[in-house]
Image (tube, rainbow, N blue to C red; front, top):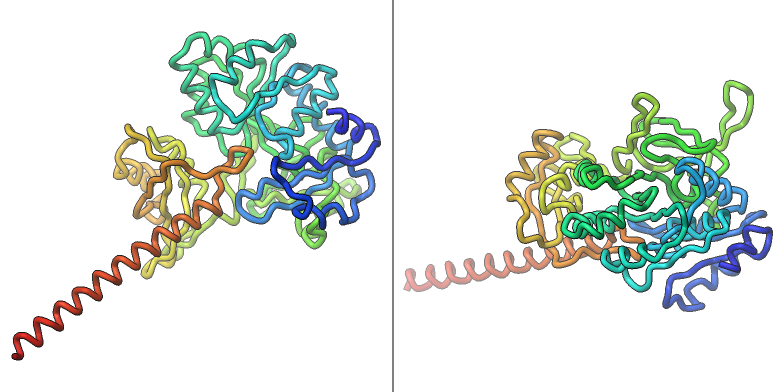
Length: 398
């Protein structure tokens, strides 16, 4: 906290690292030149690719914190539940520096009961917490069974949930419990959340170009430390009608602006083509996660000899999940036949990154390994049948 406060006051830049990081892991990053005004270097989560190191200025971070407090009704105390080497966790610390209220830290790994116990010790007049959907879902599970836990959860003036789409089912459950859910959208390149419940905060601007969500405003990052070639692709400048230059960040997310409200529909790079039809894997996940027991569903693209690609689902094992046929029917009704997954695989526990997002790279590697083992078994059985047939033919000939 002291180092961060110093960095926000024009001191030395800070690079928070996850536990267990070896000096050799960041040697190149430490030697890389930093953009002027850098206060904080944060790596992206890397849920779908190689993480990038993002340089953020003190002015962007402080603007984000001020905009958040304005949107939520004023400064307050933050319960820190996410790692500080990710922007979601670091921004809670920045907000605490701005408010002058010491944050409260959740000890150890996330546990709903531990969070409730820690929240009961918070003394700030206004209380905030930021979570990812899987954490929020587990917290609601506890609150629905424990009235005291529900009361503690209701005492938060805002529960920010971001990092992934928040399903309609989660929103309904939060509403039924009277929880002050606020859906947050943003990324490391925007200093954290910059759109709450579909509406921009502060001076954030949103536009859609070619189906892509693009963001502008004072919270934008300076650029990438370890991927300078990506800066020109992701950060673009355009002259507006007023003759002023505006810097925009290309998010890579697909979205729509309806009535001035932003709806993010998925990643542009998470689209498969099945029989000539474009299908969004994120939309498949959205529909699947609305079904009981399928809240953890992950959609992946797999090769198909006839259709080119077909979707498949991976879920954590749940005892009372609705049948796969029902999930397929729901997806067919909402998204059409090309989006219907042909099969689903169960994992005891889906691998996740430290911030709580599913590790899509690890899940995809597991599916590929599983498919390879099926192929080997099939090939072995085919070879065995051929051997048996050859033996029978020789015996008949004899």
